[in-house]
Amino acid sequence: MASHEIDVYVRFAETDAAGHVNNVSYFLYFEEARTKFFQEICPERDHSFNFILASISCDYVSQAYAGQELKVLTDVEKVGGKSFTVCHTLVDPATEITLAKSQAVTVCYNYEEQRSIMIPDKVRCKLENCLTVQ
Image (cartoon, rainbow, N blue to C red):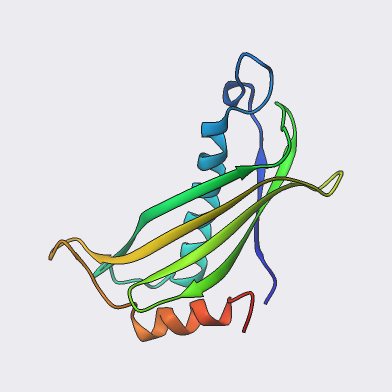
């Protein structure tokens, strides 16, 4: 399956004193990508569970600047019992340069019970269909 893609416009407010995108802003782009990916794979979610972020990392590869239009590609790398790992790649589509790479471990969580739960079969099937290596 092809990567899930979103477009990101870099606003001036997301840059720092050096003129490039602040390291924190990358996590906002990844969050937007994850949220839209989750909405696409689970549009009918009944709110008996939700996804929470357990861990996220970012490797900064190249600089980005205000006014750029970028893409975030999201892929599922691993599906476990209660969690799954998504990878994000931030690219400049004009140059095809990779700007950053991220890994995010996401847990299926029941807020009423305040505990992690098994990924529902319907969601698991959709996640497995998105795996980059099958």
